[in-house]
Length: 167
Image 1 (cartoon, rainbow, N blue to C red):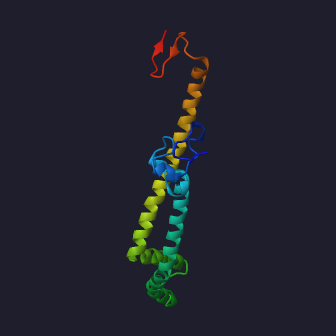
Image 2: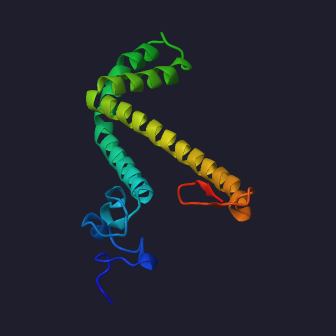
Image 3: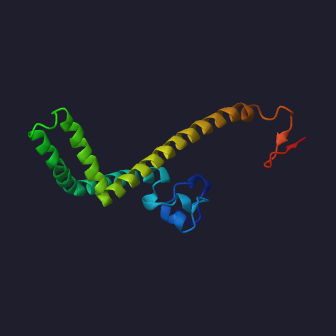
């Protein structure tokens, strides 16, 4: 029993570690698949996405107190206006929402974070949809190949590795 990755056996392909792949072993696996902890890119992507979302939640919580303070400052004249009878009670929730939006817009780092996260989530959604389309296309390809591979060539010849039919 030799060291895995040194001279991978055909039956062991794909069972070597990411370190073996990075070191040049791995039976033909590309370094593109050699990622942290031996995870596949898809698994790493989901973990990475979850970690980013957690970081965004944490960063937002850090800025919430500043945004709340600014919202209250924006609302103070509105509240005074309501107390003096110059504003309807129905208008307060709309003004409160507008004050929060203004406070968010005025907070540069938070605005930048929210815009970047929106762009990231849109890209992640597009990637997931593309992966689903790729999986569906691959399934259709296998379905189209199956009857042709089972029956062999209808012309009676055998296909060579280059795809050329020899008679």
